[in-house]
Image (cartoon, rainbow, N blue to C red; front, top):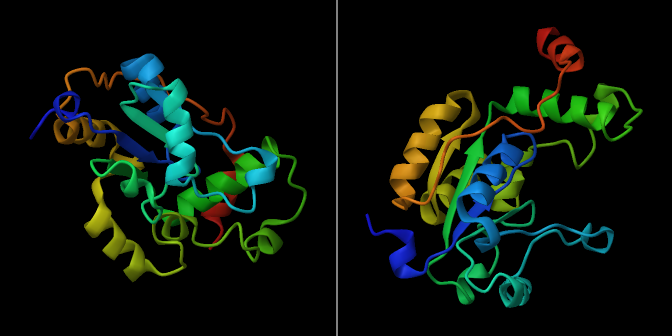
Length: 199
């Protein structure tokens, strides 16, 4: 493997909600400091959440020696390769039921969501988040094809520590420090557990 530093490549973390993304983002930030760019969406961007190459080029004016980028708008079905042909996508996936229950719990506890789960799960935002983030469609086969074609490393939340070791090997950058402290973890998982225990 070629070290990322030597080829001026950019690691692009595809941050799927409730898949340890805040922890992975912290790992990138502690490893690369001012060379890590976390792209955030403003309210005006809510309807078009994909980060495009021109937006990332504007970020490069501030993060001129960018080594990694993350954010909910970083997706493999964007046009980032037009500006960064050596961009290297990676992501973490999670058991879909556990991810969905955790997402609902987060939205209730921290986001003020006040609708029952049975109503929420019927909404567009609730369904098939992992496949939509990877392939822009509610299609598992399309997501698998996209992972094979454009995503170089896929970790699993359920095997997080082992996945980080694989990430470090795949990245081949000695600056990537995979030590971590878990971020954005609920102190009370009662809502999630109630959902997961319901047949």
